[in-house]
Image (cartoon, rainbow, N blue to C red; front, side, top):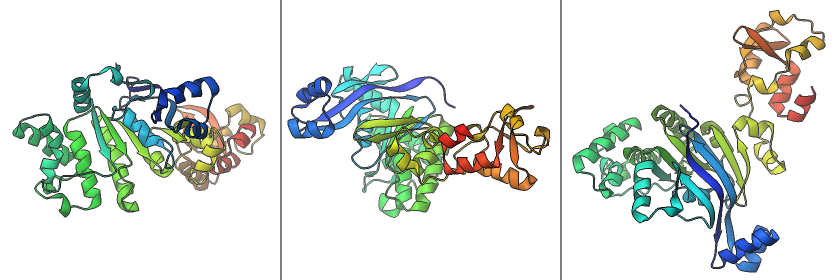
Length: 357
């Protein structure tokens, strides 16, 4: 269950790669140089530009963008695999940049697990030994680390494979081992860098659903990197869209699809199906608006749905009842109405037309 407790707080973070990064940052601040100008004048690359985000306990936060957008750089800043050029990354209130090597190792070991696209299992070790490897590095006794690893393997459905070797596993199973390895240390935060992108579509969708369900059941927080908007929508509670190192827009999938921040985001979401994404509260009109239209059907005769019903459910209600609209209810009270016209506008994703309808 999500809470308001902030586990990761990324505050105006910059990452500029290159020997003259300090000079480049100064010129960015003083002259507002673009990414291209920084490369031309200082031979430096802006990986992340003034990024701010917060991840709460129990939340799955997706960061998405095309290749070169800065998303993988950003996730590596969240556990200080790389150090910010400017700004702060706080994990549970502690600024990672202020931690010495020992404190940083402890923070990673206790609070942060990470799964990469290349899961990098040790081929000469069994599945159980691979899952327990992180605790082995920490010096945890064999029996204790094996118990923790066995519990993690059970959570990802690999108990029967613990004595096998990586070469005997499919790609999807290997990714499950990587997730089990991250879970073995029981971290509060899991960082996932495009872990399913190399898998076949069917296996990928299965792992997406399993990951979301498992993360929610265990009460973990996760930051999930992807270049696939469908994957971000399927997994994420909130999504940040990046371009050229900048977070262009952040919000729920519904907020982003219904109110894109600019044309880049609008083009990104143009092909997304809205049937299970857009909810009744986004397309309904006020009750007094329904009365003003002089409808043929009385309000009390309309079929009812909750404000969280999606477009697909609303369509089913209208077809099933032979109605022109659906009443949106909060308990016993009707709080809005979705007409057939507003439903079609929602399917097309036209917030401006909806606002005027």
